[in-house]
Length: 285
Length: 135
Image (tube, each protein chain N blue to C red):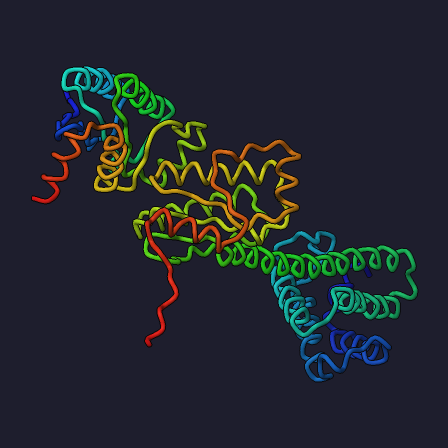
């Protein structure tokens, strides 16, 4: 009787699919606005097909078996496509778990006369489907993590542009919190740009930095020191009153660094350092 | 043995380090340079390290030492052409070379030295400079 389970499932493939579809369509949570019934049917059929094909008496108790590879692949595909279509992970999970109901129903019908075997098979099938459900969550989370990772990289890249304001003057507006890895990127970009353009003044604008603690200040001082070693002057601008307060309260010594309240005054300072003058044009009489 | 040449250019000494410094070479350079400053009465020392791609804390200290020693002998030191990676390394090592002047390249370094030393040169020398500039 026991050995028959796999065969039964293979034989009853059509029935399993029918019961499953019926249950899904009858479910109040059916999202026919996100996926059409035909698509849903194709998706479900593919999964049932892969399941009954890879299932054997040997691997039924072993969810880690490599023979389930194709099933997991399909599950990953379903998870990703559903995430894109706008299903919540809960809905995807329910979709997979509803397969369990239909499988169990078939087992129940087949093994009505052998409760012990039925019980054993029910547990095994449950475990298998549970593992499938978890796999979809895993894929979902992995997909999300990839997106987050990509975005983090993008933020690091786009948020550190070095701008050539004038011949010999570079500006670097820093937006967002400065941590060690970002300081490294900022510093490298700035120094590289100083070498390339031969600039002698760099303005570090921190108006976009939400808070300055001793660590951030340390990073700023490092950047200024490195710029100085290269032979350029570094001005820090965009210091808001709150930040000035914090810096003094924390006892951070910025006396060796030229600081300006705004980018404009930093630029004015830079011009005077380079002996440049900006004047209003005289009107032609 | 390898030696780093020290060139004399008017009031200044010019040191161009074209090889990666190893400890022995750096120590010798330090000794040679101080001797040279003393002998020639140079007013400024310009060290070009644009070809140096690797430094360690020892090298950083030697550069700082040279600057301080020159200063005692009444000569300003300018370090020019530091690579970005070298600058970052020195800062991370906690050696920001306080008291050493820096410049982007030899030309700017020379200009900086000239400006620094102009300040305390006597008027005669100033005139000399003006004439040579006009030439």
